Length: 123
Image 1 (cartoon, rainbow, N blue to C red):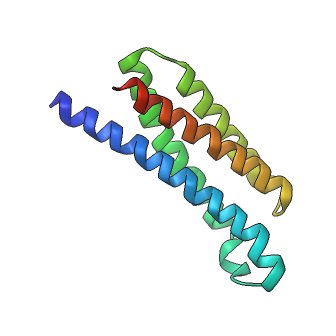
Image 2: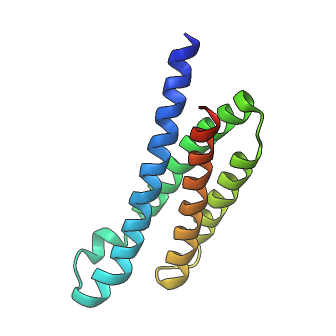
Image 3: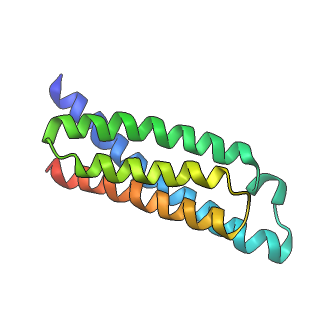
């Protein structure tokens, strides 16, 4: 049973890294494609995408980073991940544009770093 729980946690860390990458790509596409060619502005810039992504990031982050901190006793990944989630939440309040993208990309980079630290600590 313990191995199954650890496997799920490791998969969630991997999913957290993947989700962070998707979020960064989404931000970059929004900055580049929408102003240049007007492609998908209604979809790419929808606040619902950001809200859903943040909710998912918080859920995966709290569960995975919290369980990992309990398992290996290192608080650093959880604190880094929490800071990343705060930056992503702040990005929701600044409106679309460069500031939003910078906050979001910095946040997802921190969250991905925290997940990677957890995966390394689990080995």
